[in-house]
Image (cartoon, rainbow, N blue to C red; front, top):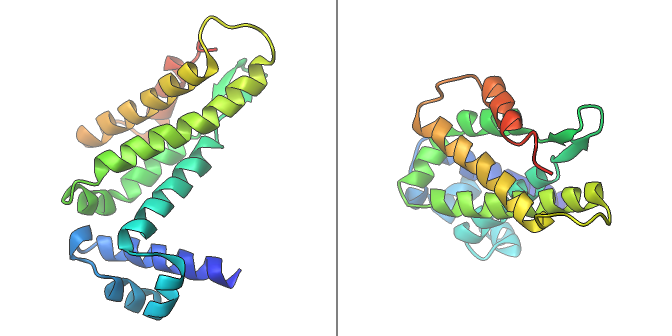
Length: 178
């Protein structure tokens, strides 16, 4: 529990620092000072700042992938797209910091793959043993790709609609996907 709290404190310290500085301008010492932990604690958990960053990107992507489910009443898949969009908008300074050092493509790729892995588990469980014209892995990649494409479009166009509306459009786009 204590180790997890230290890892979380370090991650949030990095996020807070990226509100003011580019990722490349932040040192491990800066992170440790902001989190109020020693460097030995940092290195007990992470090899370096990049490993910490990637690990948290992966954890968030895996968690989001588990937010995909089947809504039997509506007879369609559901995903927390509104939450994701709001998170990205709220973290805009962090994404700007990461964009300056070319790490956005890494986030997009990791999230798309992590989302797809979670989506595929749900799709397989919903489909059961019924043969399908399109394999679950491809359907999962399709939905994850749609989510990331819409998210990037939304950010690039400076949030032209509310996250709730974007969520509704996303769900319309995947409504007939099985």
